Image (cartoon, rainbow, N blue to C red; front, side, top):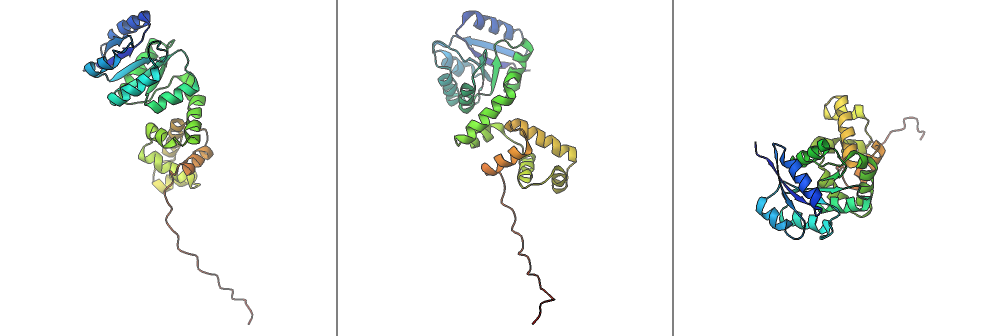
Length: 236
């Protein structure tokens, strides 16, 4: 099985050497490290990494600019940002720059490896301490600044999830959606749950509002006009 090619950009020598040695012990991961002093893009060009581990606090380089440069030059690379606890405004910027995941530097080895393997498969990963309120902030920021479309592209709802969102925005209950799409009720609930998690929303009302605001609702088919009622009791 081919190993996941990882480029580590970290200017702390102890961390750089320790993380590199730790990852290279894994049978499915091959790591090349960089001090982040200007050689990172050259190494990326040479090894064509699947995953880039980027220290958010580089002293010699601007980490955000580095992430943007890597995604511009090598869009196929998945970037994971490492930090002790990134602030919300930074996470919004990195999400918009194309970063696929975040890992806390005090994470367990199991979490660290899980993050690398997940983003290598194209998944988005955020550590549990940041998940709920943080993604809510990202969604709110994206909507307020007209960037929800970019966020929706990053989230990637499935076709069925789009259909469920559309019907929720039309005011349908889960039972009505199940009948409309000819699927089981528990399947509808699963789609609703997954969609709420992906968009970091907390209720069907928020989901419906978001869908209507961002134009996710398809135009309804026009109904035939109702026939005027005839009043048989009208006197001449």
